[in-house]
Length: 233
Image (cartoon, rainbow, N blue to C red; front, side):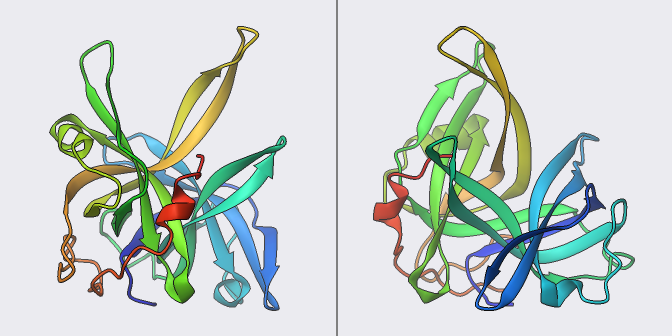
């Protein structure tokens, strides 16, 4: 697996049959939804993308357990006439689920802020900050990953500026919410993002902050900062 500042580990139950997603350079990719438990007892329902090379000979059916390592990837898709930023866990390696007993959902990212942080407080006084992180991929590409922070971490994040490099660890989560429409009705939607548990400034020689994950190379200059300005979740 390529060593970058983008690492994800997931273990969960397949919720639906694998469906053909797309083909790239003659290689087919399939998508499904993975139900991943939280330590609190709640569950996340997360989009996953797998190459045909990984699933050959693997009995990946609805209800079976899947354990993977890979990266968080983003891509743009036109939905109802508007561009949307979609996030998926891109599997690069399948693991033996019987021997894997670590945290079933962990993410480590190194990247640069490409939008000003959005800081707010809830009616109950809880502090929240939303971040959009540009994370380098090979061949000059970048992934744009929405992140959400809480409490003291949110206060720290609120002071960050566009272009600041950070390292973070957290989990990939699904979050249900309601969107108010212009006619007064509400629409049930789901956001996919990284819920941040640790966040700190990154230096060019910074090492990983989640030491049980593979060693990362130092981040290179963020190639996708300009494109990230228009990224919409």
